[in-house]
Image (cartoon, rainbow, N blue to C red; front, top):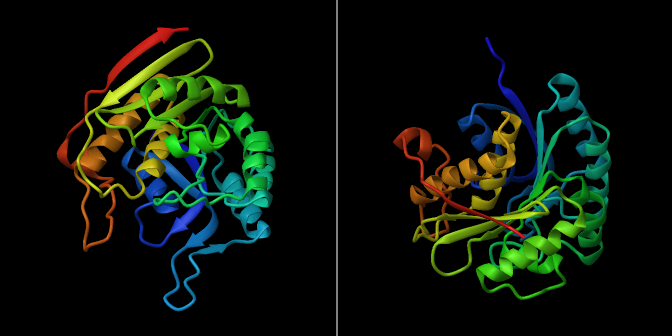
Length: 278
């Protein structure tokens, strides 16, 4: 039997199952990748204290990473919510300690309502320690704006310039996601000489909880399986577009994307791809 490729997610645990570690592991499983996790924090709101983020100790983070590495090892690593300078620095050191070809950094910096999840010193650590290690970073428009010192981003051309400028932070590739623009869902991929736009239909739904986590996890999964970055991003965009198309909610709260949608409905979206040398 051919063993599946291996991917580790280093992120927060989302109790509702729609985002974070849970979304990442569901995505890995759907794409036939052996998934592992290092939980940085447990996210779940206490009904009385209102505390929402319950951090894990640095010791616990190091223990999880070391155990997964010794038991299985990694073809790809994906990072999500790291939330503090100390955790970002620890995770950067852990990643540097292993020989892994593919590092996907989802720079989780804002919540659904644009609340900042990272303090200024953590943003500096993210820029200086972790982003330079990345095969690809996957900021959404708000996160790209914060990384560019709160530069406003309002058009596809703004996204293109943002990708070019973010590349100077040291990642091999930058994927700026244009989910908040009007019109089709356009993302921009840049690696130093070529700008590639990837366009998919915009799905009219509010049920997009965990979409960014799922997208970056799918990229990590496809990279682990040996796809090149352009194919990995295009396949991942199709995967998340189908998941959003079949998203749902059990109540009046924002619901999850449906990770099983591509497998269950046999649908893959055609992604329009345009590449331009600069």
